[in-house]
Image (tube, rainbow, N blue to C red; front, side, top):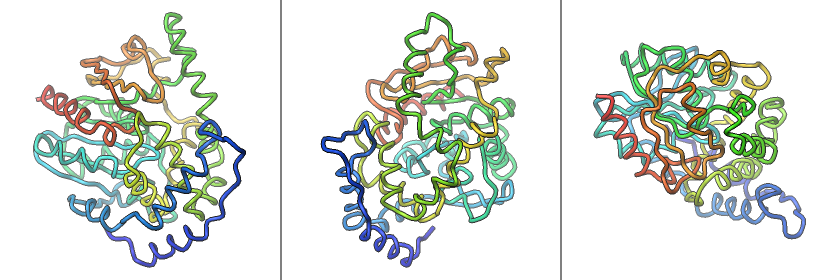
Length: 355
């Protein structure tokens, strides 16, 4: 994988020409990413960030592409042993796992795909993928391309939804689930005893969920500005990388993921799971709950304290066979970057229990 100098030169030119918005006096995060925060990130992107160093880290892993579901699906594959699939979400990329992969590859065969439409699994004009289609493409990768009849799945964000869909559609293949976000989002189905959690989810949806509505109903309109302005892209993504964490991420990790979106031109395609969910009424886990169904594979769940939404264990146990429930003291939405060793140790226990 190599990004041409012409792409990086164009990025630097655009960053230098940024036209900054005004902000009301005293504006904080409650109004969105503050100008000072984004300006500082953009200045580092332009003058202090070394993409070539980050690119070298990515290229230190064994990377491949495979023709799957009509696209060239990019993936990293490292180590030997039990196959473990690591699935990122939005606004993440495979970079999220660059420290976790070395921590696991002595215990497992670690497979890390760029989700279809994200990062290096994209070409202009290719078809778009929601959760169902992502799950089918990744199952084909694991079984037909890599030859793993059974495998373990680890994920958060959309990765968690894809992991659950994989298990629902292919229970014979998924030997176990390890999730750190729970894709249940219909609080009205939760029991009366969980009234506090139901209200917390409703409050999060009102105060933080507007991006879901925009990306899920008008993804193309949003993509114009974010594909043309790197500062606009940085502002849109940096807010999530900041407020969804327990402690701020390393700015170079944030900039690496933003750069991957920029150089691959994937921000518009990355919105598609939201569109498929909201505008096309795609399958969701809550439908399984409503039908009284269950997910077959045993579940290990990490309930990080600063995760976006906390789904009570009693609600989770209505649909999953919970084998292990862990509550780390620190961590948020990106634990592979925030709490690498905590997540790695949990996954190692997960792998060990599957043998």
